[in-house]
Image 1 (cartoon, one colour):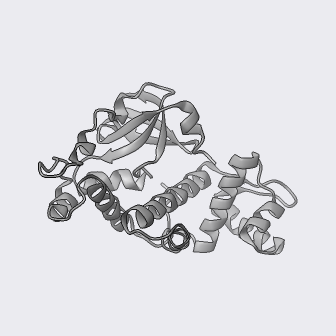
Image 2 (cartoon, rainbow, N blue to C red):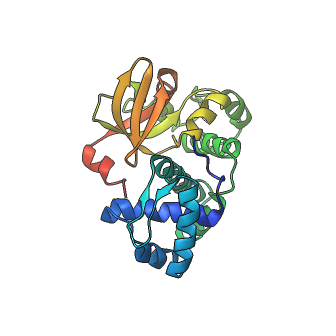
Length: 243
């Protein structure tokens, strides 16, 4: 499984740009990559050669660039981190949009999965409870029992949420809650399952659940899929998140 942080920050940024160009324009050209990155085409060529050796892109001189399956998965993970961190910095810490965007760019490449998992838990906790007296228990045990004194605690058991494992094929959902203790949440975070991520149910077969995130296939165990609560959304809303 490709891991965020295995490449330099610059190369991971190139992967993000190629991923976005492929979805916006169906192809990624060297000149377009250079323009979006703000560098010379020679710099892009050197980076593409390195990524090609890593098995992350298909690239030949004067040709279009195409992400391999491994490259697309790694790019998706970096983008999911960025999107989550930007929301965390704005919604939880109250930063402005510009500051959150800049800081998410700086942080996304360097966080360990364990740290990211704890930020996800903190985000969920604060979004649902709004206070910190149960935070230590939540981080350790994945406590999902609503606090009786919280007026907004019903978010945890909101009737609109459904288990990811119960979605029908070719339907969409937005991640609302990750159940389980810290190790279980960590396994989901490693796969890029983060709050508010849009997922498309593809199939269930022999104890595995296959979904797509930003068009990239992700396989979960049945147990993992039953730890993810999603809000069903329309196909149109799901597809709107792909670029």
